[in-house]
Image 1 (cartoon, rainbow, N blue to C red):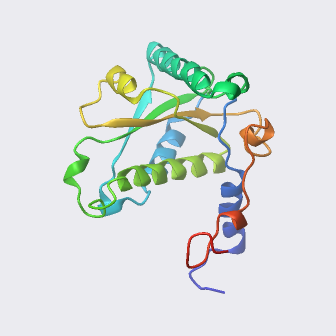
Image 2 (image 1 turned 60 degrees about the horizontal axis):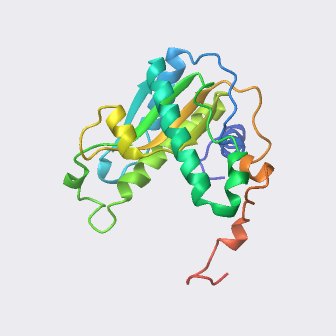
Length: 215
């Protein structure tokens, strides 16, 4: 066995966290202890980032009126999304798309301002700042699952309206509202699959060799 590998039990725990991670929408209130929240955010902060730019910024929402205002932005976009979906709009409206009112912690994750100054790794692929931020969110998600906490990524909002609500500087951009906290149970599979909205595609359909489409 590779001497750099984790033990069998440690490897199994990593793969279990990946397999059992869920985009949660149902929360059971409660709280997240400050030391646990700090540990989770530190895990997010240890994510890889292109050029070590660390473009992520986390805003912890503690004021009830701000939480309500964010929920209102999400509800506005939910209605607009339903209208844009046409024939599937009614089905979409039956889905639970957020847990903002029930989760223990609400976080907004944004890209920082001044990103254009970071050229390393972004000259031809400027969206690598977003890729780096997504890695931080995934770290947080997996660490939360390992700690027995649910997390849901909400992307139904107008980023300009949310940026204004949170007094963010020009050039920054919010990309995730994260609901975090205790849950009664984790979904057995992706919620959208369980509710018939979409089906997960097997890896074999998405894996090519040498050229696009060659399996």
